Length: 538
Image: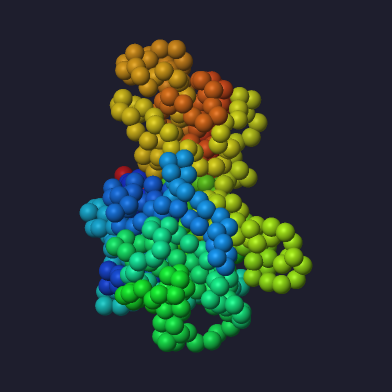
């Protein structure tokens, strides 16, 4: 079968290519650039625990050394600390790193993967679809035709793929603007991110409002100043004045030394593509959505797009067409992004409107700072990862379903599990392999050798039920899982979202849940199509 064509060699496109390759799907990445990225210290990303785990699993590289895990977070209003968060094992800190560092790790992994081919200086020019595949034409020094099974547009906000497919991209332009600077200096605090609203040295005007400081390695900080609405030119002189004014204010009047490394202007748009799939062409990342106001991270959502799409596309690539499974990508991911955009649209007037009755309501300032912190820290409606509780893949009518600490559709907790070979691993380490995960909660198994319990109790019956599932599945055993009683059986998707929790071994419920997760029973047309493709490949 032809490879999957991915247009765009940013973090989302590279992540998708690696995720597909890990599931034995060959890819071609069309990179309109030279194959390397210009270092830009002021262009950074903040990743939560789930997306850090995703990238590390795909690349085999620890990201911690490339960025900074914040020691804490503080929200300050004028001179008063309104909110303070200290991170630890039960409350993992976000990771802040330069985007070119992230892309470099992904490119290095791809360079060593024989299933991924990268075509540099290749700008997409045209797309042709047929029932059996898709053809992409590129222009440039190596302009040619590429034949693929599917094509995924990860080519950014001005996506050529989206335009060629005539997909509308409605939304709001320039929702917010920030002046950005990366500089090396010493601040009064160490390794803590800061949101400073209404700093005392800026007492008037529409831009009196907000500064964000986020640490990077080697004493580097990224500073963002919220700009007033409009298109006023941000000059180098203005940025330098902002830097000096801010550093002097934080140092109580003494100007600390600093080295200015990079500057820029970050404009936030809110847009959402009407469709994310047109037959064999799909969209992901900024090509499908733009968000980022109030501290939210648009790139992180693009990585979640890739994680959601990869296992579905891999199953279809290996086992033939399944329209319901591919359609669920748009339904799940577009719904999650739309919810975040709605939350931002509702909160934005409260946080940016100023004055009015809200300024006299006791505690309003603290509540607003809490909302902003949620966006920056990946929490609440503004920042938390999307859930798929209303997914078309969610099973219904399971008699043995029970509640655990993770509601169906949400990402699972990363507990220690015993794999089939007897090794102890993290649950997240087994994700992204194209298999469903069946996890038995069995207290006591963690202290006994696997040979003593693998053939005891309910294990043989559960192993037989897993073998009978309609797709490949891996049986794991956990000593404990939050909120789960002994002998609870969890079914987990390849992207780490919980399908269901069952009380004990229930083969019929387990089979029904697995079949629903794959999009339900395939149609006769889809089955015939797979048979034809298999015969044609002989």
